[in-house]
Image (cartoon, rainbow, N blue to C red; front, top):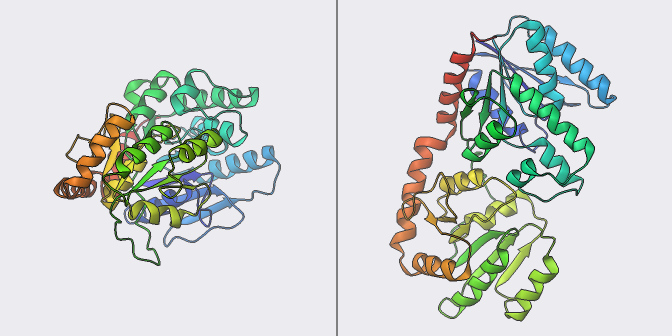
Length: 373
Protein backbone atom coordinates (compact mmCIF):
# COMPACT_ATOMS: atom_id res chain seq x y z
CA UNK A 1 0.00 0.00 0.00
CA UNK A 2 1.29 3.50 -0.81
CA UNK A 3 0.79 5.75 2.20
CA UNK A 4 1.64 9.43 2.55
CA UNK A 5 2.31 10.73 6.05
CA UNK A 6 1.92 14.48 6.52
CA UNK A 7 3.19 16.23 9.61
CA UNK A 8 3.98 19.80 10.73
CA UNK A 9 7.15 18.62 12.53
CA UNK A 10 9.83 16.02 11.89
CA UNK A 11 13.20 15.27 13.51
CA UNK A 12 15.59 16.90 14.29
CA UNK A 13 12.57 18.65 15.86
CA UNK A 14 11.85 16.93 19.19
CA UNK A 15 8.29 18.09 19.91
CA UNK A 16 5.37 15.84 19.08
CA UNK A 17 4.41 14.62 16.55
CA UNK A 18 7.97 14.58 15.13
CA UNK A 19 9.31 11.47 16.96
CA UNK A 20 5.98 9.67 16.51
CA UNK A 21 5.99 10.10 12.71
CA UNK A 22 9.63 9.07 12.39
CA UNK A 23 9.13 5.85 14.38
CA UNK A 24 5.86 5.18 12.55
CA UNK A 25 7.54 5.54 9.16
CA UNK A 26 10.34 3.14 10.15
CA UNK A 27 7.86 0.47 11.17
CA UNK A 28 5.36 0.93 8.32
CA UNK A 29 8.09 0.97 5.64
CA UNK A 30 8.73 -2.74 6.27
CA UNK A 31 5.44 -3.54 4.50
CA UNK A 32 4.35 -0.36 2.71
CA UNK A 33 5.60 2.34 0.36
CA UNK A 34 5.90 5.30 2.73
CA UNK A 35 6.42 8.93 1.80
CA UNK A 36 6.58 11.81 4.30
CA UNK A 37 5.69 15.43 3.58
CA UNK A 38 6.61 17.95 6.27
CA UNK A 39 7.54 21.56 6.98
CA UNK A 40 11.28 21.71 7.64
CA UNK A 41 14.50 23.29 6.45
CA UNK A 42 16.28 20.00 7.09
CA UNK A 43 15.18 16.51 8.12
CA UNK A 44 16.71 13.33 9.49
CA UNK A 45 16.81 10.37 7.12
CA UNK A 46 14.77 7.20 7.49
CA UNK A 47 15.98 4.16 5.54
CA UNK A 48 13.62 3.24 2.71
CA UNK A 49 11.41 6.31 3.20
CA UNK A 50 11.27 9.35 0.92
CA UNK A 51 11.02 12.57 2.95
CA UNK A 52 9.94 15.77 1.21
CA UNK A 53 10.30 18.99 3.14
CA UNK A 54 8.64 22.33 2.44
CA UNK A 55 10.92 25.16 3.54
CA UNK A 56 9.71 27.09 6.56
CA UNK A 57 11.21 30.44 5.59
CA UNK A 58 8.31 31.41 3.31
CA UNK A 59 5.19 33.50 3.77
CA UNK A 60 2.30 31.54 5.32
CA UNK A 61 0.23 31.48 2.13
CA UNK A 62 3.30 30.50 0.10
CA UNK A 63 4.03 27.60 2.45
CA UNK A 64 0.44 26.39 2.30
CA UNK A 65 0.35 26.63 -1.48
CA UNK A 66 3.64 24.76 -1.91
CA UNK A 67 2.61 22.08 0.57
CA UNK A 68 -0.73 21.56 -1.20
CA UNK A 69 0.88 21.52 -4.65
CA UNK A 70 3.59 19.05 -3.59
CA UNK A 71 1.07 16.81 -1.85
CA UNK A 72 -1.17 16.83 -4.95
CA UNK A 73 1.76 15.78 -7.13
CA UNK A 74 2.88 12.98 -4.81
CA UNK A 75 -0.61 11.68 -4.09
CA UNK A 76 -1.30 10.62 -7.68
CA UNK A 77 -1.01 6.89 -6.95
CA UNK A 78 -1.37 6.97 -3.17
CA UNK A 79 -3.87 4.72 -1.40
CA UNK A 80 -4.19 6.72 1.82
CA UNK A 81 -3.04 9.97 3.38
CA UNK A 82 -2.48 9.76 7.14
CA UNK A 83 -2.05 13.20 8.68
CA UNK A 84 -1.37 14.80 12.03
CA UNK A 85 -4.01 17.23 13.24
CA UNK A 86 -2.45 20.59 12.45
CA UNK A 87 -4.21 23.10 10.20
CA UNK A 88 -1.07 23.72 8.15
CA UNK A 89 -0.98 20.09 7.01
CA UNK A 90 -4.57 18.87 7.42
CA UNK A 91 -6.11 21.69 5.34
CA UNK A 92 -3.96 20.83 2.28
CA UNK A 93 -4.82 17.16 2.88
CA UNK A 94 -8.55 17.92 2.72
CA UNK A 95 -8.04 19.90 -0.50
CA UNK A 96 -6.05 17.06 -2.10
CA UNK A 97 -8.63 14.52 -0.94
CA UNK A 98 -11.28 16.44 -2.88
CA UNK A 99 -9.12 16.77 -6.00
CA UNK A 100 -7.57 13.29 -6.04
CA UNK A 101 -10.44 11.31 -4.45
CA UNK A 102 -8.05 9.77 -1.91
CA UNK A 103 -9.26 8.65 1.53
CA UNK A 104 -7.70 10.45 4.49
CA UNK A 105 -7.16 9.63 8.16
CA UNK A 106 -6.54 12.39 10.70
CA UNK A 107 -4.86 11.69 14.03
CA UNK A 108 -6.39 13.96 16.68
CA UNK A 109 -4.30 13.49 19.83
CA UNK A 110 -3.79 17.13 20.75
CA UNK A 111 -5.81 20.27 20.17
CA UNK A 112 -4.06 22.94 18.09
CA UNK A 113 -6.42 25.76 19.07
CA UNK A 114 -5.94 25.03 22.77
CA UNK A 115 -2.15 24.78 22.41
CA UNK A 116 -1.98 28.13 20.62
CA UNK A 117 -4.27 29.71 23.18
CA UNK A 118 -1.94 28.58 25.98
CA UNK A 119 1.17 29.73 24.12
CA UNK A 120 -0.36 33.19 23.68
CA UNK A 121 -1.44 33.13 27.38
CA UNK A 122 -5.11 33.58 26.58
CA UNK A 123 -6.15 30.50 28.53
CA UNK A 124 -4.95 27.78 30.90
CA UNK A 125 -8.19 25.81 30.60
CA UNK A 126 -8.19 22.05 30.14
CA UNK A 127 -9.44 20.57 26.87
CA UNK A 128 -12.99 19.99 28.07
CA UNK A 129 -13.38 23.53 29.43
CA UNK A 130 -11.80 25.04 26.34
CA UNK A 131 -14.08 23.34 23.84
CA UNK A 132 -17.18 24.18 25.89
CA UNK A 133 -16.44 27.84 26.56
CA UNK A 134 -13.03 28.97 25.32
CA UNK A 135 -11.27 31.99 26.81
CA UNK A 136 -9.36 33.12 23.78
CA UNK A 137 -9.13 35.43 20.76
CA UNK A 138 -11.05 35.68 17.49
CA UNK A 139 -8.03 34.24 15.68
CA UNK A 140 -8.08 31.10 17.84
CA UNK A 141 -11.84 30.76 17.40
CA UNK A 142 -11.27 30.88 13.63
CA UNK A 143 -8.77 28.01 14.00
CA UNK A 144 -11.41 26.06 15.92
CA UNK A 145 -13.92 26.59 13.11
CA UNK A 146 -11.37 25.41 10.55
CA UNK A 147 -10.66 22.35 12.69
CA UNK A 148 -14.37 21.50 12.77
CA UNK A 149 -14.50 21.73 8.96
CA UNK A 150 -11.35 19.63 8.51
CA UNK A 151 -12.16 16.85 10.98
CA UNK A 152 -15.61 16.38 9.49
CA UNK A 153 -14.01 15.84 6.06
CA UNK A 154 -11.87 12.92 7.27
CA UNK A 155 -12.83 9.36 6.44
CA UNK A 156 -11.71 8.44 9.93
CA UNK A 157 -10.46 10.42 12.92
CA UNK A 158 -8.09 8.61 15.26
CA UNK A 159 -8.26 9.64 18.92
CA UNK A 160 -5.99 8.68 21.80
CA UNK A 161 -8.48 8.45 24.69
CA UNK A 162 -12.16 8.45 25.63
CA UNK A 163 -11.90 12.18 26.33
CA UNK A 164 -10.64 12.97 22.82
CA UNK A 165 -13.31 10.71 21.34
CA UNK A 166 -16.04 12.54 23.24
CA UNK A 167 -14.67 15.97 22.26
CA UNK A 168 -14.40 14.90 18.60
CA UNK A 169 -18.02 13.78 18.51
CA UNK A 170 -19.61 16.42 20.72
CA UNK A 171 -17.68 19.58 19.87
CA UNK A 172 -16.11 18.86 16.48
CA UNK A 173 -19.35 17.23 15.29
CA UNK A 174 -17.69 14.16 13.75
CA UNK A 175 -20.00 11.17 13.29
CA UNK A 176 -19.47 8.52 15.96
CA UNK A 177 -18.83 5.75 13.41
CA UNK A 178 -15.92 7.76 11.94
CA UNK A 179 -14.11 8.01 15.28
CA UNK A 180 -11.63 5.25 16.15
CA UNK A 181 -9.73 5.20 19.44
CA UNK A 182 -6.12 4.03 19.24
CA UNK A 183 -3.92 4.76 22.24
CA UNK A 184 -0.66 6.54 21.56
CA UNK A 185 2.35 4.23 21.90
CA UNK A 186 4.67 5.24 24.70
CA UNK A 187 7.98 6.58 23.36
CA UNK A 188 10.95 4.26 23.73
CA UNK A 189 12.35 4.32 27.23
CA UNK A 190 15.12 6.91 27.36
CA UNK A 191 18.59 5.71 28.22
CA UNK A 192 19.74 7.92 31.07
CA UNK A 193 23.40 8.53 31.99
CA UNK A 194 22.68 7.71 35.64
CA UNK A 195 20.97 4.97 37.64
CA UNK A 196 17.19 5.29 37.95
CA UNK A 197 16.49 2.95 40.84
CA UNK A 198 13.26 3.94 42.67
CA UNK A 199 13.82 5.98 45.83
CA UNK A 200 11.56 4.98 48.74
CA UNK A 201 8.92 7.57 49.70
CA UNK A 202 9.62 9.82 46.70
CA UNK A 203 6.47 11.13 44.97
CA UNK A 204 6.04 12.95 41.65
CA UNK A 205 3.05 15.20 40.91
CA UNK A 206 2.19 18.02 38.51
CA UNK A 207 1.92 21.70 39.40
CA UNK A 208 -1.74 21.79 38.44
CA UNK A 209 -5.12 21.13 40.02
CA UNK A 210 -5.25 20.11 43.68
CA UNK A 211 -1.50 20.54 44.17
CA UNK A 212 -2.22 22.26 47.50
CA UNK A 213 -4.08 19.14 48.69
CA UNK A 214 -1.14 16.99 47.60
CA UNK A 215 1.25 19.23 49.54
CA UNK A 216 -0.98 18.93 52.62
CA UNK A 217 -0.81 15.16 52.15
CA UNK A 218 2.97 15.32 52.48
CA UNK A 219 2.57 17.12 55.82
CA UNK A 220 0.15 14.44 57.04
CA UNK A 221 2.45 11.60 56.02
CA UNK A 222 5.74 13.14 57.17
CA UNK A 223 5.37 12.04 60.80
CA UNK A 224 5.11 8.34 59.83
CA UNK A 225 7.41 8.57 56.80
CA UNK A 226 10.09 11.18 57.59
CA UNK A 227 11.96 10.42 54.34
CA UNK A 228 9.01 11.50 52.19
CA UNK A 229 9.84 13.88 49.33
CA UNK A 230 7.52 15.46 46.75
CA UNK A 231 8.74 16.67 43.35
CA UNK A 232 6.30 19.00 41.60
CA UNK A 233 6.73 19.35 37.82
CA UNK A 234 5.71 22.53 35.95
CA UNK A 235 4.51 26.07 36.66
CA UNK A 236 1.35 27.34 38.33
CA UNK A 237 -0.19 30.82 38.11
CA UNK A 238 -0.99 30.54 41.85
CA UNK A 239 2.65 29.85 42.74
CA UNK A 240 2.87 32.53 45.45
CA UNK A 241 -0.06 30.97 47.34
CA UNK A 242 1.40 27.50 46.87
CA UNK A 243 4.79 28.62 48.20
CA UNK A 244 3.07 30.20 51.18
CA UNK A 245 1.31 26.90 51.92
CA UNK A 246 4.68 25.10 51.92
CA UNK A 247 6.12 27.75 54.22
CA UNK A 248 3.15 27.62 56.62
CA UNK A 249 3.41 23.82 56.79
CA UNK A 250 7.20 23.94 57.20
CA UNK A 251 7.77 21.74 54.14
CA UNK A 252 10.68 23.59 52.58
CA UNK A 253 12.86 20.45 52.63
CA UNK A 254 10.04 18.07 51.70
CA UNK A 255 8.62 19.72 48.55
CA UNK A 256 10.71 20.73 45.54
CA UNK A 257 9.30 22.58 42.52
CA UNK A 258 10.79 21.81 39.12
CA UNK A 259 9.65 24.71 36.94
CA UNK A 260 11.83 24.28 33.85
CA UNK A 261 13.74 21.04 33.46
CA UNK A 262 14.86 18.95 30.50
CA UNK A 263 12.93 15.91 29.34
CA UNK A 264 15.79 13.70 30.59
CA UNK A 265 15.59 15.26 34.07
CA UNK A 266 11.81 14.90 34.11
CA UNK A 267 12.17 11.25 33.09
CA UNK A 268 14.74 10.66 35.83
CA UNK A 269 12.52 12.17 38.55
CA UNK A 270 9.53 10.07 37.46
CA UNK A 271 11.48 6.84 37.15
CA UNK A 272 13.12 7.21 40.56
CA UNK A 273 9.80 7.86 42.30
CA UNK A 274 7.99 5.44 44.59
CA UNK A 275 4.75 6.56 42.92
CA UNK A 276 3.26 9.22 40.63
CA UNK A 277 0.06 11.20 41.20
CA UNK A 278 -1.62 11.85 37.83
CA UNK A 279 -3.24 15.15 38.75
CA UNK A 280 -2.45 16.78 35.37
CA UNK A 281 -5.76 18.41 34.48
CA UNK A 282 -4.65 20.67 31.61
CA UNK A 283 -3.53 17.58 29.68
CA UNK A 284 -5.23 14.27 29.04
CA UNK A 285 -3.80 11.82 31.60
CA UNK A 286 -3.73 8.84 29.24
CA UNK A 287 -0.19 9.31 27.89
CA UNK A 288 1.16 9.96 31.39
CA UNK A 289 -0.40 6.75 32.70
CA UNK A 290 0.81 4.66 29.74
CA UNK A 291 4.39 5.87 30.28
CA UNK A 292 4.07 4.91 33.97
CA UNK A 293 2.86 1.44 32.93
CA UNK A 294 5.94 1.12 30.72
CA UNK A 295 8.31 2.23 33.49
CA UNK A 296 6.64 0.30 36.30
CA UNK A 297 5.66 3.35 38.37
CA UNK A 298 2.57 2.88 40.58
CA UNK A 299 0.09 5.61 39.63
CA UNK A 300 -2.67 7.32 41.62
CA UNK A 301 -5.48 8.97 39.64
CA UNK A 302 -9.11 9.91 39.83
CA UNK A 303 -11.35 7.59 37.77
CA UNK A 304 -9.63 6.79 34.47
CA UNK A 305 -10.29 4.39 31.60
CA UNK A 306 -6.88 2.69 31.89
CA UNK A 307 -6.81 2.00 35.62
CA UNK A 308 -8.45 -0.91 37.43
CA UNK A 309 -8.27 0.02 41.10
CA UNK A 310 -5.52 -1.76 43.09
CA UNK A 311 -4.76 -3.93 40.05
CA UNK A 312 -2.66 -1.72 37.76
CA UNK A 313 -2.95 1.55 39.71
CA UNK A 314 -4.85 3.29 42.49
CA UNK A 315 -8.12 5.17 41.98
CA UNK A 316 -9.20 7.95 44.37
CA UNK A 317 -12.58 9.69 44.44
CA UNK A 318 -10.84 13.05 44.50
CA UNK A 319 -7.43 14.53 45.25
CA UNK A 320 -8.06 15.37 48.91
CA UNK A 321 -5.33 15.14 51.55
CA UNK A 322 -7.41 12.72 53.63
CA UNK A 323 -8.03 10.24 50.80
CA UNK A 324 -4.51 10.56 49.38
CA UNK A 325 -2.93 10.01 52.80
CA UNK A 326 -4.82 6.74 53.22
CA UNK A 327 -3.96 5.43 49.74
CA UNK A 328 -0.30 6.46 49.82
CA UNK A 329 0.12 4.95 53.31
CA UNK A 330 -1.10 1.64 51.89
CA UNK A 331 1.53 1.79 49.14
CA UNK A 332 4.30 2.78 51.56
CA UNK A 333 3.43 0.21 54.25
CA UNK A 334 2.62 -2.82 52.08
CA UNK A 335 5.58 -3.45 49.81
CA UNK A 336 3.72 -6.24 48.00
CA UNK A 337 1.01 -3.85 46.75
CA UNK A 338 3.28 -1.60 44.63
CA UNK A 339 5.14 -4.70 43.39
CA UNK A 340 1.87 -6.28 42.23
CA UNK A 341 0.68 -3.02 40.64
CA UNK A 342 4.01 -2.68 38.83
CA UNK A 343 3.89 -6.27 37.59
CA UNK A 344 0.31 -5.93 36.31
CA UNK A 345 0.85 -2.53 34.68
CA UNK A 346 3.99 -3.70 32.85
CA UNK A 347 2.12 -6.77 31.58
CA UNK A 348 -0.74 -4.58 30.41
CA UNK A 349 1.67 -2.24 28.64
CA UNK A 350 3.33 -5.15 26.83
CA UNK A 351 -0.06 -6.51 25.75
CA UNK A 352 -1.90 -3.32 24.82
CA UNK A 353 0.05 -0.08 24.65
CA UNK A 354 3.29 -0.80 22.83
CA UNK A 355 4.27 0.02 19.24
CA UNK A 356 3.45 -3.46 17.92
CA UNK A 357 -0.15 -3.15 19.04
CA UNK A 358 -0.35 0.43 17.73
CA UNK A 359 0.83 -0.65 14.27
CA UNK A 360 -1.59 -3.59 14.24
CA UNK A 361 -4.52 -1.29 15.02
CA UNK A 362 -3.38 1.19 12.35
CA UNK A 363 -3.09 -1.59 9.74
CA UNK A 364 -6.72 -2.51 10.45
CA UNK A 365 -7.80 1.10 9.94
CA UNK A 366 -5.79 1.40 6.73
CA UNK A 367 -7.50 -1.73 5.37
CA UNK A 368 -11.01 -0.43 5.96
CA UNK A 369 -10.10 3.06 4.72
CA UNK A 370 -8.37 2.11 1.48
CA UNK A 371 -11.53 1.81 -0.61
CA UNK A 372 -13.25 4.91 0.80
CA UNK A 373 -13.44 8.22 -1.04
